[in-house]
Image (tube, rainbow, N blue to C red; front, side, top):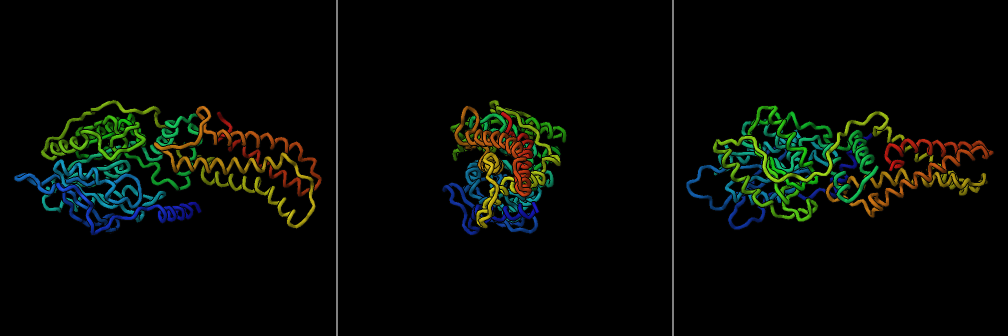
Length: 473
C-alpha cells in the first residue's frame, strides 16, 4: 500500500514540477570566446541522454589534446544542462572541454532514485566526451555537485577511463542524516529551538524513510570513496547549509586514506555557499558568480593531475561555519514505524472524527439523543486539530526546509504555530480526563461506546504527542 501511495505521489509531483528538458537541437547561448557541440549518449538502461560540450572557440596553437570534464547535477528530476552552464563556461575558459547534459527524469523522482543508475548515466557521458575531437581521452574526469558528490565517486570507482574526480558540496554522510541535518540547521538559522527541531523533525524523516518515501536513505558513501583511486579535488563553501561542512571533509579524507589514496586536495572557499558560489548572506542566497579562485583552482589542479603530477594530501582555506553537529538517524523501531503511525492516524480519525459524525447523522435523521457533553466536543475538535495540524505543519517544514526554512512567526525561539499545537494538545488531554470522569453519566449504551472511543483516542494521544514533542518544551 505505501509503495503504491509513494508511486502515485511521485507521479503527480513529476507531472506538475519537472522542468522541461532543454531543446536537444539547440546549443546553449555562450559568450563569443566559447563554442558548444551537441552530443547524445546512452545512459543506464539504454536511456538516450542529450548534452553539450563547451570548449574554447580558439584553443591555443600547439597545445596537445585538451583535458575534459563531465559535470554531474545535484538533486532534482529532469534538470536541464543550462543549470550548470556557469560552471561549464568558467571551466572551459581554463582550457577544458566540458560536457553538461540533461538529467534523467525516467526512474528518478522525489521518492525514487538510484545513485548507481545516475553513475552509469555519468559514465555514458564520460565515454561521449572521450570521443570528442580535440579532447585527450586519457585526461577526462568527472565533477559532481551535492547529490553528484555521491554519484561521481561511484562512477570513478567503476572505470579506469576517469582520470580525476572533483566533488563540490559533497557528503560523506548517508543521505537521511544529511537531509535531517540540513532542515534542522535551516530551522535553527531561522531562530527555532526546542522540541520541534530536536524531536519532531528528525522523527518525521525516520517515518518517511520507513514508509519508502525517502530514496536511498542509508546509502553509505564511505566504502565507495575508499575505492576511488583517482586524484580527488574536494571543494566546500564555508557557508554550506546543505552539507555539514566541518564534518564531511575529515570523513571523506579518512575514507580515501583507508583505500590507500593520498592524492587529494581539499579547499574551503570564503563567502561561498553549498555550490561554491558567492553568497552575501552566509549561504542563504546564491549569486551567479563562482567563488573567486574556484575556477582557476580547478583549471590548475586538472592541469597538474593530467600532466602526471598528482597532489599530496592537503586541506586549505578558511574554517567552515557549522553551528551544530549532525546526529544519527537510525531506522524506525516497530512502535514508531510508518505502519504504526498510519494505524494511530486511523484510530484518531475514527475516535475524534466519529463523535461529530454521529451527531450530524442524528440531526439529519432527526433522532433524539442525550444532551451533548461539552468537554467531549473539545476532545474531538482538539484531537483533530492537533493530529492533522501537526503533520501538515511538519510536512510543510520538510518540503520548504533547508537553508530557506520559514517556520512562521516566533514567540521567543518557538514557532507560534507549534506553540498553538502544543496548547491544543494540553487542552485535549485535560478534556479527555474530564470526559472520562463524566462517561458514567451517559445512560444509553451507544452513547457510552461513543464517548469511550473518544476517550481511547485521547488516551492514545498522550504517548503519541510525547513522541512527537507536542508535550515537551
